[in-house]
Image 1 (tube, rainbow, N blue to C red):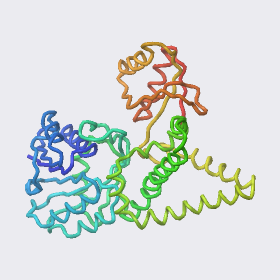
Image 2: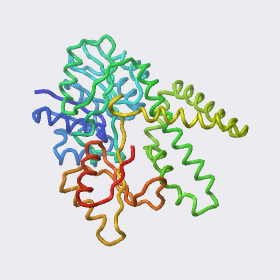
Image 3: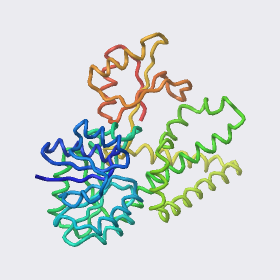
Image 4: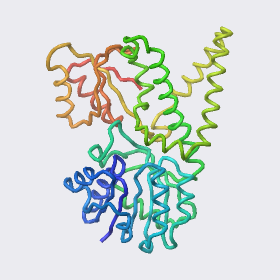
Length: 363
């Protein structure tokens, strides 16, 4: 019987556990988590078979999955290096940075295999209750496995085949540079914009209430877990500092163009961004974690929202969030519906139009 040990049963860890059980219900999953209520829930829902608070429970595992914040992953690898692990065990992680993780993994015992991993998927929800087998579907799953035997990589992919991800192997440096630019830097920018806006409206009770529409869209990721992002940036400091320096130079340049009233340069600034942004899409680069929105005009009457959700539920579509818009910048709609996948978004559009709703889709 195959035994899997998972350290950390948050969104990612619990979703992987669910996917593993889908592959083979007889696989034994042992899990550790710092929150006893998380373990209790996972046992009750049969997401795992055994709960523990001890890392030594990993000694008899065929697979070890580290699904905690990156700084804890690094410390756990150091602790695993001191344990007598099962020969042939595959150890992997789901950390958002890889260079420091791979360095820590070099001290693991002989006859173990470490494969660095990072599924590029997430949700606005967190914790064990938010986990889903299909969380990773069609998302990139990065693997960092220098000099690892292809058979071992195949074993890990087989264990996680129910995730239906797009596997991509690259180096630790390539990974950290890539996610630094498209994930870590944007999170800093979003948080800084929210903080600066809050300060700007310190004496205006109306200000933050009016900050809707486009502002909420580009700052959505500022709602991410502060503890997690502190750990991520700590382990990708050099890369993000360099990228942040380049970004600040971009801001300095546009500031100078504004002061000079250089209309041509300002136009080119926005035109270049539009061209690059319009070229983005899953058909070109696979799916990085994203959300897909529809905007629906609904009557201001009792039961209007309930009717929308009923229609979507009957169509078995996964609605992850809805929001009543008070200000709708460039959007002719009052209700914002958010979906995890583009497939659900398009199906929802068809269903709602068929029910005589006016629906607007925005990329």
